[in-house]
Amino acid sequence: MLSAEELHILSFYRASELAGSMLLGKLALHTNHDHLRVPLTEQCLEEAKHAWMLTQTIDKLGAVPTKITQTYQSELGKVYGFPESTVDILCLTRVLEVVALETYQRHVALRGVTPAVKETLEAIIEDEVGHIDWIQAELEKYAGGPDGEKVKHAIAASEAASKTVSEKFYENPLIQRYLELAT
Image 1 (cartoon, rainbow, N blue to C red):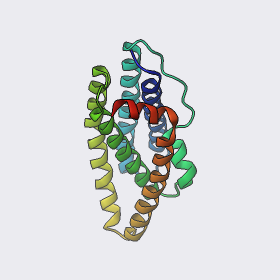
Image 2 (image 1 turned 60 degrees about the vertical axis):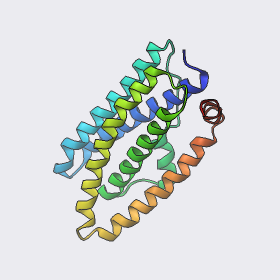
Image 3 (image 1 turned 120 degrees about the horizontal axis):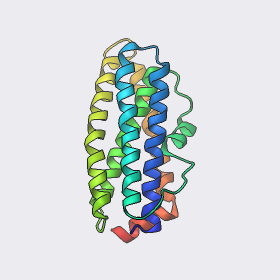
Image 4 (image 1 turned 90 degrees about the vertical axis):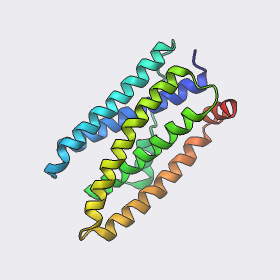
């Protein structure tokens, strides 16, 4: 059985994975960069798979995902603004993947995590590492070219925006209560 706090957190993860999938799908459809179309489509599929894994875990534990309207992506977009280039998109995707990886790793390390939740998050963690490696390799290609300074600026701006959003996430009373109980 899930506590209200853990259900909220898992529902937030699920909603964020869905939002990430939809965003990556749109990027795959609309990108003018042919070499990005296939990997963006693959990442879109994997993010949807993560959302489904979380949905199945919540269901297996006798709950229904709660409605979450503010995802990490939506909040990051408010702080960062509209991405204007492929570099911006890659930098934002990178911080989203890094935050997901770090958040899931922290969650798995908490005491008293439901075994089914731990198993699901550990499986997702494996995929997130691959996503980060791919994005980092793409950014390094851009950084070595004429857009090198733009890449550095976009990385710094996306990391600053992500820090702001992360701080807001941890201000949520349900999140604070869950972390207090689990540490």
